[in-house]
Image (cartoon, rainbow, N blue to C red; front, side, top):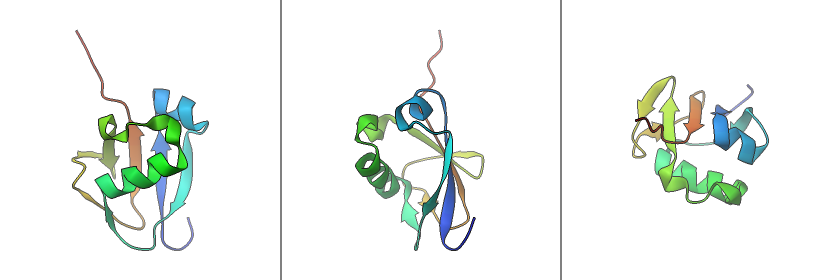
Length: 83
């Protein structure tokens, strides 16, 4: 990965809707997960509403308020339900 970017991984339904399992995403400055999800929705409107999506940064589940910065690995997935 070159320069200021993050590695984004998409899982399950999110991967189907984006048409990819991973991509490099330019990120010139750190942002909150919520702000980044807004950018994600702008790129992939079919993911709306993105507020339901979960994030993991560097393989740790995080709240949407968590900071994302260049060099991070960000996983995006649907909430998991069980029963």
